[in-house]
Picture 1 (tube, rainbow, N blue to C red):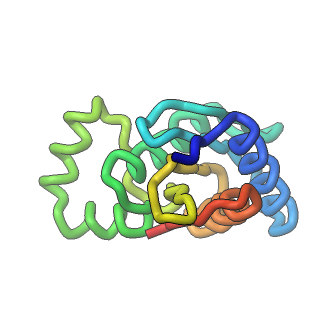
Picture 2: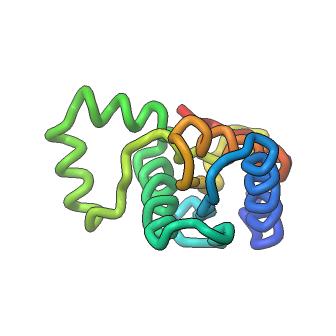
Length: 143
């Protein structure tokens, strides 16, 4: 089994920040969670607003908790709002069901965790997450 190490999480964050700079994004906050929803690493760029830790973690937590990337999770929430409200309740309101949470998969397709990014548009957050995951040698699954 491949583990999501702190070194891999740091690679993901560094590459996500680099993608943000390349695209000219607003300051980002990046959370990397393992498959159990536990925080492996978080960093935010200078100037990122104070809710970036919670928002980025909520995107990642939702992806890993439900087992689908933020793109599918957002569509799921729109199609089944009552079920999503219940899931949010049982999670202690930890889930943010919007684009920007991306599953991390190994070569066999096993979920290793998720990356959540907050700071720019959801689509740009997702692009930075994908760049980070791929830079660490994993497969990104945005849903």
